[in-house]
Image (cartoon, rainbow, N blue to C red; front, side):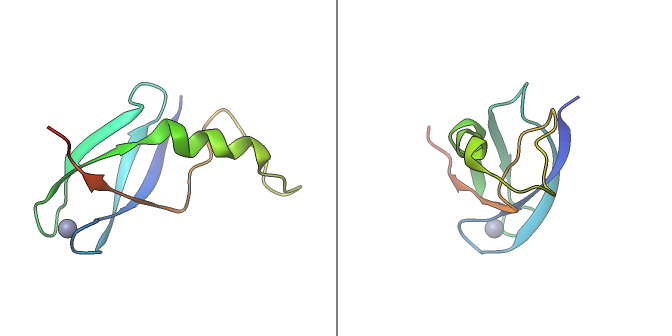
Length: 78
Ligand SMILES: [Zn+2]
């Protein structure tokens, strides 16, 4: 239900790319940059927890989490 398209920005080459994510099932996403091949991970939960303060009459928080327009990835930790 929480599948949504999310834009990411590579921490290395700064390119942006879209991925379909499921924020409920995958609180931590891992992948690689389609441009430079750098592996990355993104922790969705800390980002999403800031959402509750979001107050805009036009922007209702539905069942999906409100994430930043562009999530910047971080280097993968082994
Ligand atoms: Zn990259």
